[in-house]
Structure formats: C-alpha cells, structure tokens
Image (cartoon, rainbow, N blue to C red; front, side):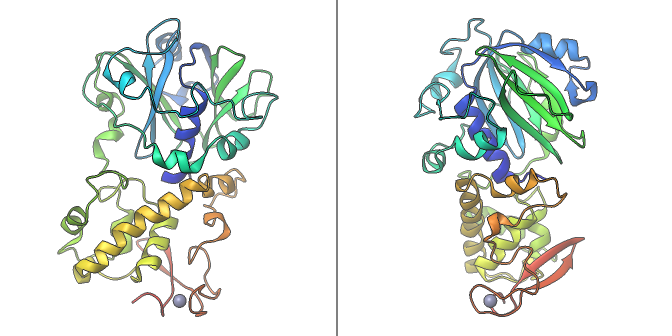
Amino acid sequence: MPELPEVETVLRGLNQLTRNQKITGGDVLLERAIAYPFSSFEFISGIKGNAIATWHRRGKYLLAELSSERDGGTGGQGDFLENNSSFSPFGFASRTPGATTEGTSATHWLLNALNPRTALDSPSPPLPLSPSPISFLGVHLRMTGQLLWVHRDEPLHKHTRVRLFFGSEQELRFVDQRTFGKMWWVPPGVAVESIITGLQKLAIEPFSLEFTVEYLISKLQNRRRPIKTALLDQSVVAGLGNIYADEALFLSGIRPETLCIDLKTEQIERLRSHIIQVLETSIAAGGTTFSNFLNIKGVNGNYGGVAWVYNRAGEPCRICGTAIERIRLGGRSSHFCIQCQR
Ligand SMILES: [Zn+2]
C-alpha cells in the first residue's frame, strides 16, 4: 500500500509533469472508480476543458486544483494559482529526458522526474477546504492504485480504470488492480471535504508547522496504549504507516510497546524529529516502498533495502549487532532492537 512518502512522490511528479496542461477528455473503464459525481459522464463533463493548476496532498489524498480557463494557459484565476506560480523551478512540465515521450514507463517518471533536493525545498501549498470558485479533481490510490503519465500510444494495462486525455498526446492513467482506488470531481462552489468526506477525519500533517512537540505531547500524554499503536492512529498524525513508525522508534531509541504515559518529554522531542526525518529520507529516495509496491507482492517494501529494523527480524542490528526482534502490537508487526531501544 502506498504510504505518505509514496503519495508525496506521486504528487511531486504530477506537479512537474501535468501543471498547466488542459484535460481534453477522458474515458472511464470502471464505473465504480468514480466516487463522485455518480455518473462517469458527469465526471468527464466536469473536468473536461479544465487545465491542471496545481496538485495538493492531504494525508494520502491527491487533489488537483482545476483552472477553468478553457485554453489552459498560465492559470491566474484567483489567489491559489498566483501564490503557486513560482512552485516549479523547472518551469512548465519539466521536460525530464525520457520522462514524457517514447512510451517511457511510469516507474521511470516517478523515480527519475524529481530532483529530491528541490522537491524538499518546495512543499505543496495548503489545500483550501472552504467552498471556492475552483473545482477539484481528487484521487485516492488505496491499496494498489497507480497514476501513470504516459504517451497515448502506450498499450493499455489490463487494470486501467480511468484515462484522462491531455494535449500533446499524453494521458494520465489510473491503474488499479484491486479496484479500491477512487476519483472525485468537486464542482466549483462546493467545499472539498463535503464531497471527499474522508478529509474530515485527518489529523495534522507531519511536515506542517502545527506538528510541534507540544502537539505530540498533548496527543500522547496520559494515554495507556503502546506508542507504536498511537503512531499508526491516523488521528494523531496523518499518513504514518508501519515502516516509518518502526524506523522512527528505532532512531529515537524507544521500544514500540512503551506506553505513551511513560514517555519523557525528551523522548517525544526525539520522536517528533525522527518521524520527519524518516519520511523526508524516503521522499528524497523517490518514495522507496512504492518501487517495491509495483512488484505486486502484497506487502510494503523494506524502505529501499536500508531499513534499520523494519522487516529485519533475526538479522543483526546495524548499530550493535543484536538480532532484531519482532512482536505483534495491535494486529501489526513491530520490529525493534532490545539493546538500542529501551
Ligand atoms: Zn541495536
């Protein structure tokens, strides 16, 4: 399942390759892939003729602001577009060699189209949630969804569910083997979270300014549950999955079964900074689990093969050599070093 770094990687690829490109049409191959409106005809009619202004990520939702300027162009409709006009240092659709032509596979654009250093310096802008004159295209990849930016001549993968056609012979394909993924069109003048209701329940983002030590203490103090379980609870911090929770706990020297109530302030401080660090490391590597995810093994990858503890039960700790332990907590595997984590 794509985790936050993978979705962030997809977001940054989309912002480099699809911005200012006009949607000229589409084809829905699986009706239930469209969550709203209730007919795919309305969905295609809604987005057709709009240009992609910019993409946002909220939790694991991807949301494109659509510019109704019918000729695409440079946007300029409202504050959001103007605020973001300097987002891409590469300018229009960054012509990364091999990324947009000659049927290059989506894996290549996902992994190669990004300059990680620049990407980290350019966080996506905040998502406007109140009703706005702008319409939105929403996507959630769920278990197996992928967004592929390909030339129109690229042979159709059998799990292709939705095709969005753009000028310049390119198209955005939504490929989804398990079919849990969804797309939405949010009409202008409607609050995004009233259509994509899952947005209402999300906690704050790990990269946001609100993710402070004080915030984390307020969420954890006096709680009698294991810290690992708390980290996987999406109402504490949005988007943190099993791999990154295990890795952040290792780097912080905290055992996964430690009760939140027993954590000291300095442990919570370490934990906060290591949560951010492991996510940034993965994003800089291009969303490492996503590349394994493409192998359809049904499990997450191992953090690019360089995990400290995740999925390494029985192997020697990279710091002290002690065999990594695995326990079950809240129905999930947790991996840790009994020497390095107390
Ligand atoms: Zn160790």
